[in-house]
Image 1: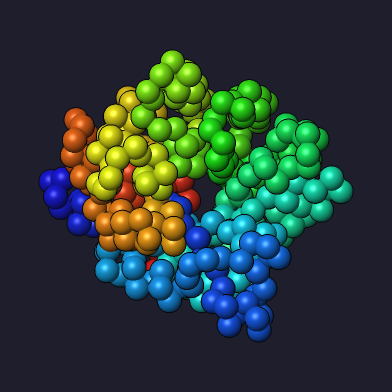
Image 2: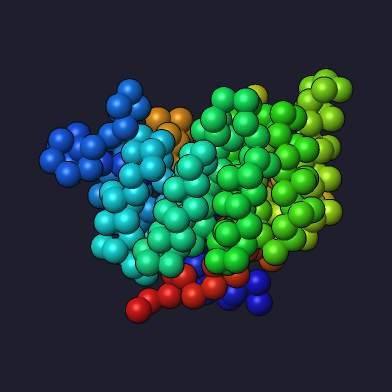
Length: 296
């Protein structure tokens, strides 16, 4: 029976980016100054990669290359409405203009989530400042999950995340790239990973098992990430975990098809059931964003 349902389940990538080609950037969708990409990440390349890997749809995360100008991603969402939904980038400007932008992108455009990058907050400010709390609360009102990027590790941000989860239980949270936790090798890393696992006590917290090349200490197929996945499943359950590629960065690492295959390989190293893998490969994100990836 599992085999039958697996074939009917859509495979959805929870984390990838697209940006303009150099020509598009010159003509219509400029890059943010100083953040010009060093590798191609256009929608044509993405669709080719997804087709080769048998991936049906994806959540497009606004890239820093275009910062708060969402016009390129918006154009891709409009072009392929049954393929993609969007995750916009929260603008934590002191004047609160980001709150209006968030509402516009969620209500008027096809964005269904918002990303918090704490390094974009004004110097010395936390995600729990007045603007951050307003953005987080508004996202909950609009039914838009907040994806949190903790590229420096979860340690510096754990208290802020706990505070936001506690104060706004109606806002769903997604921890990008398993909160950038690598397989722990010392007490400090184990403490950080445990704090990540303990966030599972908040039922609104979900996890992206994504960008495995950022989480591993090994070469492809990143088998050491199996212990991360095993412990995450034991705390969160597979129905709160979703895989993600981190295209286009993954292309230079192991290839897009390679990362899709690595997910199944890694899951095969632990006592994960076929049902668990179905949740991780598509059911979790499809349930979280109901009505997305449905043919019009």
